[in-house]
Length: 399
Length: 225
Image (cartoon, rainbow over all chains, first blue to last red; front, side):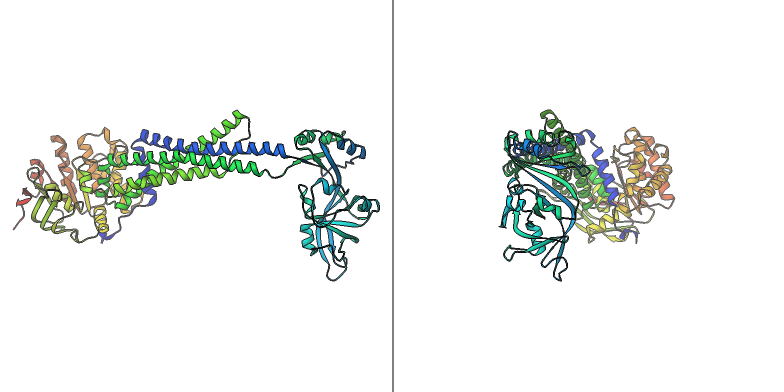
C-alpha cells in the first residue's frame, strides 16, 4: 500500500534544502558567517601570534643559553684540521675549550664477551668516535661508571674505550668491574667507562669513544672530522659565525656549524601560559559568535513559520524539519570556520611580518577552527531546530 | 470511499476552549469533487486540516485512504501527507528563493523520489497545468493564477488520491479563478484524485459535484442520507 511507504528524503536532498534555506536571506546569512568567522579568526590569530611570539621568546632563550658549538666536515670533504687552527680557535675570546674527534663509518661491528669468534659474542653495528680525552669535558659527559681516558692513555696509544650507555646496554655491559672488553673488527679494547648523558653530541650515547692515537690500528675509513667547542653563552653565536673560518680558512664551506643549548624549559612554560591566555580570551569571542548564530537561527525559524507548515503538509516529519535547520546552522558555522581560519592565518602572517618574527602555528589550529565552527553552529542551532520541529503544522500554515 | 468522517469534533484548547467542529459526518468517493462552504468561522478549514492530518481531532473518526487518523502514529500521518494527500492553499506558499520548477519538484521531496526524476515529473505537471514555459521563472514574476497553478502542480507531485484545497481562488481574479477551476476539473476527469475544496466562491461551489454547508461547526446540508 503506497501510504505505508516511508516518508523519507535523502541526506543530499536535506543538504540542498538547507543551502536553499540559507539563501533565503543571503545578507543575513553572510553577516552571520562573518560574525562567527571574526570570533574564530580571533582565536586562530591569538593562538598563532602567541605561538609565534612564544617561539621567538624560545629562540631568545636559546640564544642566551647556547653554550656549545659542533663543527662537522661535510660528507664529501677531505679536510684536515691543523693543530695551529685549533690553537687559534682556543684563543678566540669566549671560547672555553675545544676538542677534536673523528667519526668512522657507521656499520663498524662491535663485539663483547670473549672476542668476535667466541660463542657468546654479541655483534652490534655502532658509531665509533676517535677523540682527544678533552672531548668528554667539552660535551658535558656524565659517567654512570668508570672514567674518561686521559693524556696518558693517548700517549701510550692505549686500547681503551668509553661506551655510550645505549650501546653498553645492547652489549650487555652494565659495569666495568671484571674489566670487560669490546672488539672493533679484530682489535680488542678495554672498557674503562660508560657515559650516561651528554649536553650535546648524542652520537656518543649510542656509540663508543676511543683515543685518537689508537684509531690507527682500526681497519676503518674516517667519515668525518668533528670539532666540539665549549663557549661562554653570550659569545656562542658570534663564535659560530667565525669558527669555520678559523679552522678552515681556505675552505670554510666544508664545515657545517650547529649550535647547541640546554632545553629552554622557562621559554616552553611561558609559551604554554601565553597559549592558555589566548585560548581563554578568544573563547569569549567564540561564545558570542555562538549566541549570534542561535539568535539569527531563531529569527529564521520565526520568519519561515509558513514554510515549516508547508513542509509538514508535504510529508516532512519533525525530524526532517529539525535536521534541515540544524544543517543550516552547521553550514553557517562551517563557513564561518573556513573564513575565520583563513583570516586568522593571514593575520598571523601579517603580524609576524610587521614584527619581523617567524610566523609559527601548529597545523592543527586552522583545522580545529573549521571543526569548531561547525560544532558551534550545530550546537547553536539545536534550540531553534527543536522549536521549528515542534511547530503545529496547521497554525504554521495560517501564519 | 476515499474519505470517511464520522462524528468529527475539533476543539481548540485554551483559556476558553473553542469548539470549531461539532459532530460532523460525511464521506467522499474516489474522484469526487466536493466543496465545503459556510460563513467565516464555521469550521471549514478546521475540517480540511483534520482531513490532512495537520490538526488533531478531539473526537470522532476520520479515515483517509484507508488510514484511520484517530489512532495512527505521527509517522503514519507523515507518510499519508507525503503519498496520499496533496494540499493547495489560498496563500500559495511558494518559496520565493526557488524557481517554479523547484517549487513544484519540492512536492515529492519527502517521498524518496530522486531529484532528477522529481524534476522530470514537475516539468510534465507544469505542462499539464499550462505553465510549462514558466519553469525557470521565480514565483515573484507570476500572476496570482499562475502561482495557484504552480501550487496545484506541486500538490500533484506525490500522485495523491485526495487533493485538499483551502480557498484556492481566495486571492484570484475572475479569470484566474475560472482557470483554476478548469485545472481542478481536468485533473479529476483524467482519473486524478478526489478534490475537497473549502471555498466562499459560488463559481467554485457550482463546479463541484456537491457542497457541504457548515454553520457554527455543524454540517447543515450536503451529505446524502
